[in-house]
Image (tube, rainbow, N blue to C red; front, top):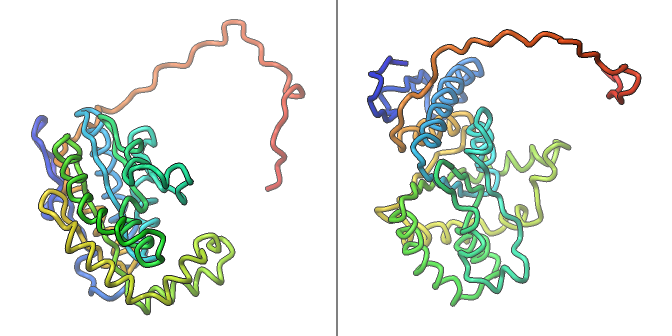
Length: 285
């Protein structure tokens, strides 16, 4: 990374976060060694961004949408891996309750919006209405069209209130989604990722495609445009998305000077209780 002037506001632009990954051919996998090297660079920058958000009292919302198994959870995990959950938190809401169904549609999402000094990552969001609810018939035509009318205005209000709103759509091919679904079937640690709704989405591929096109036509607005992530190669998608996210929010490097640990306090007569009085986890390994 290039050293910058102490008070210079920075955007992490394409020319600043160097990545060797772009030298690889688009449809080929990235070697693990290169991927880990680039990911570490980006995660260090994410920590700097986090500290700037906290210091400056920024409010940031990042939305992750796309097809099932497109890799949204993977990139969210890499973003949050080194961050403070008090500053950067993930919102992944379940099925709405009967009470929530009776509320104004956006009402259940509003309490999860960030306060000053916070960044919220939505693993799916209010766009459920324009996607799964529309395709699966969980909302009426009237509710759907009202959503398309109201959503751009809701997002413009967020932006006018000072919220940074960034929207990502993870795009994956039919063949790659099929491969990932088959992988989940054979992996006991990933069975929970394969819901009946995911399986149903396979039989409605074209309907989901049309729903996505309609969403973009109504909600790809100047104040909060959609950014599409080519997600057929997971590791490439993660690096590209994180790099782009860093470029979207100007930030300064607030890394403190090297920390020196103070000397440990002396015992001063302290006597540790007998170890036999405590319950220890068995050494199974």
